[in-house]
Image 1 (cartoon, rainbow, N blue to C red):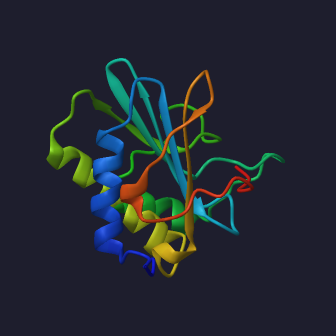
Image 2 (cartoon, rainbow, N blue to C red; image 1 turned 90 degrees about the horizontal axis):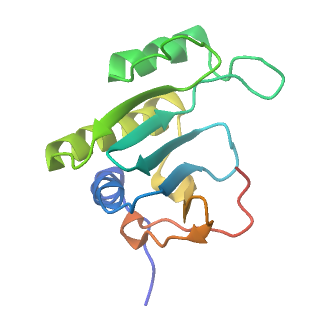
Length: 153
């Protein structure tokens, strides 16, 4: 059986349902296989899901994005970091959220990955998912992308 990579719409639908299925303490990071600063991430903690798109500073204190890319994230709907520009753009969804809210955030993620980070297709993506603090791996087959053990965060 041949495995096919999803198109952006199929990936978006899989992302929305995967985020909705995160357990308490669940973490999901989706990013470019080669360019590790290009990612979106989710953390579910008790009564909320925190969604972020990479836009903070690198390990040397330099911005990861240009001013134009930073502004593009805000046009997509990503709120900028509130107090510290070294942090990522992000938002919080109350849990449980409505399915429309999961789809809206998934749309924002696809726009960031495709349009801001210029990732050509979900074929360039991979994911890591686990439960914090145990580190137990989570499988997210609805994403339709791999979870390679050697992917660096």
